[in-house]
Image 1 (cartoon, rainbow, N blue to C red):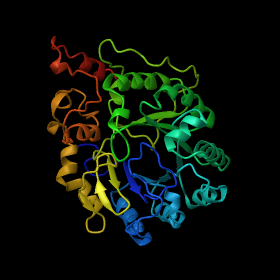
Image 2 (tube, one colour):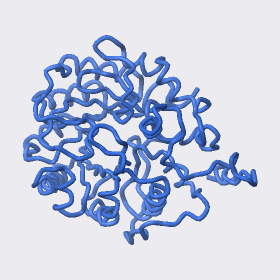
Image 3 (cartoon, rainbow, N blue to C red):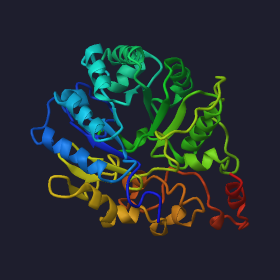
Image 4 (cartoon, one colour):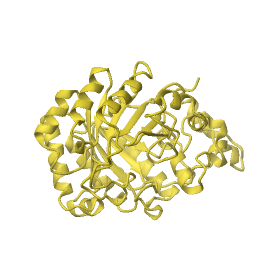
Length: 375
């Protein structure tokens, strides 16, 4: 049985789409006010109960948005998740609403990690990306307060044309913040995000090579979203002639140990990952918005395990193009969201991968198999 056939590694609940920011890349197309059709407190608690029913250990749970703090019941929801044995993280927006008192209440309710978005090393570029002046200042204040409260900190960064040159400087900042994880979100054209902001396959490859080299030098973990070929790169396998960009940062520290908070293999849309939006719609991920059901009428456990869409996304034999011929399809599988955005078919090849599978190389030499067996 495949590793994620029975339960996802992570479950994301978009608790609301209300948000004071207007980010240029926003998947959710966040709005100023809460949607009256949002899941109620009772419905949210019922959703958490069903996520716990996936089995022990249950999936990691992330409350996202919009801005989860726009829900007045958010502390109660964290507390409920904690009571039933879930590990709950939360991603607030960088606004004045994230007070020390609110963070303390979340910590006391059992919040296991705070994930904060930082998309540029300086205030001007970050605020322009978030389209609200002062967002960078508020974000740094949130980080400072979280550290003072002992809340484990994750930094999220959208990787796109506007942000990519700041990655080395951001890496230094992430280390200085004492973050446990740096999550690199490679842009998918969903919501407000525009296709021309995304990086090309060779550009993504160079960033992944840089990130893999950086990981060996820094005390925090590095994970990618919508770039599962990072697993291949971590195993030292790059396309012929690929160059490293930018030069590896000179941070010196032992690598971060793997833990329960890190997936043992690539997690992709519908394969180790399930997403529930603010009105209960169940999708493979927020970046792959194909509806498979709704928690108001369907069981999220059954949908994840049995719905044809989810089953197909977990079956590498159904992949098309280079992904279907690739010797890394079990470990990677490509970004199903990027494939869908580019072609309308979530099982098509990932256009964001520069790797040429051994089966399609003229020599037919399966060098990757040897490299993988020694990994």
